[in-house]
Amino acid sequence: MFTGIVEEVGAVRCMPPRGQAGKIVIACRTVLEGTRIGDSIATNGVCLTVTAMGADEFSADVMPQTLSASNLGELAPGSPVDLERAMSANGRFGGHIVSGHIDGVGAIVQRRAEENAVRVRIRTESRIAALVVPQGSIAIDGISLTVASVQGNEFEVSIIPHTGAQTVLLGKRPGDTVNLENDMLGKYVQKLLGVTVGGTPAADAPATPLASAQADDSSGRPSGLTMEFLARNGF
Image 1 (tube, rainbow, N blue to C red):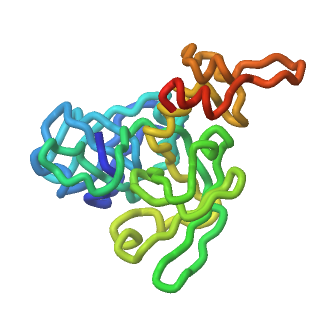
Image 2 (image 1 turned 180 degrees about the horizontal axis):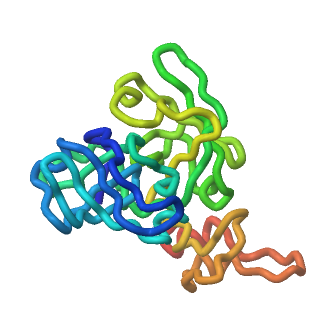
C-alpha cells in the first residue's frame, strides 16, 4: 500500500520495445534505501515488484496488462517517473490509501496559473469520472491530490509549488496522459451499493438490502427506497 506522497523522481534507463512486455530499469537513489528484491515501488502510480537492484537503479517486469492499462508504455529512456516505496507500518500517512492498481488513464486538457498554484484540468472515462468528487482524493501519476472541481468527465486539481517541484505532473502539457487511481473507499461503496455510472445496477453487485430496494421494473411504480427503509437497514 502507498499513500501518494512521491519520494523521488527517477529516470527510465531501459524500456522494452514500445507496446511489448519486458523489463523496465529505473535510475534512482532514495527509494533504494531499505528496499529488497520482491518489494514494491509505485512508478507513476503503478505498483511494480523489484526484481533486481544496482547501486543506483532497480529493475521490474511489466506485463501486457500493465502497459495497456497505464501510460508506462509511452515511456522511453530518459523519461522522468514518480517513485514511492510501499508504506511502512510506522510511517506517516501523509496522503490517502493508494493501492498502485490504477483504474485507467486521463489526458491533460488545460493548465493555468492561479496565484501561487497551477490548476490542471484532466479528462477521463465516465466510469472513472463517476467516482471523482469535489474535495475528494485521487491519485494522478502516483500523486495524492485533492479534487478542486468536477464537471462531467473532466475534473481539476490545484498543484502547489512544492508538489510541482517534487513530481512529474507540471512537466506535462495538454494532450499528455496521466495514470489515475480512484479513491479505494469510493470503489468499495459503489460495489456495495450495487450501482454503476448513472445509478444503474451493476451486473455483479451483491444482493444487499439497498440494491434490492433500488430494483424496479419499467411500470413507473415506486422502488420502495425511502428514508425509513434506509434507517431500518443501518444507512
